[in-house]
Image (cartoon, rainbow, N blue to C red; front, side, top):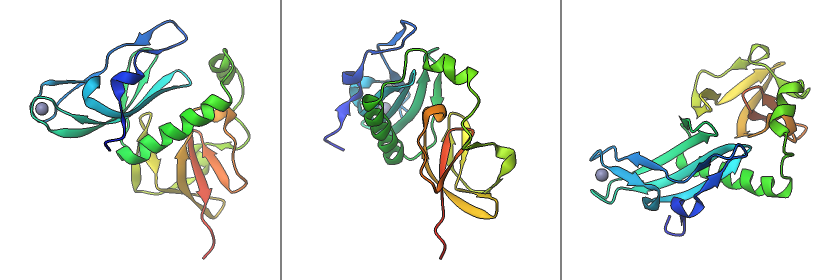
Length: 186
Ligand SMILES: [Zn+2]
């Protein structure tokens, strides 16, 4: 954990609408005082006009440590992400790396609403889902596995931009932006 960057070093993060996030702070769940981004360690990145943030916060007042996992929209809404910190941090690292290789076009968000979903995207009604969830992503539950056409698919990853997501042959994409991988036969 000691090698991680301070979240304040990632700020400010700019959105295309001209807004930017300059400060970020959370209340310490232990002493209720404010913990600023200079006391959070992890990663923050703008992925398709959403800031994904995964950090370990250490309260400077009482030294209490707590994870901060959230998505901040261009409208400055903060959505909680109920994934384990290490897993969410890995996603952000992966997404920010792939985002650098192929930056989305300027009007990507407009295209996404006009385009139909890619043929590989399947809706919730087409699948049976596990009862157990691993957490949530953008307020949608992440099911541990789904059943589709008699085959079981296990949760693999989230994708920030379902319209352009590249899928392997044994993967399928659920409409919420969740990628599942077909479970190998025993
Ligand atoms: Zn505290």
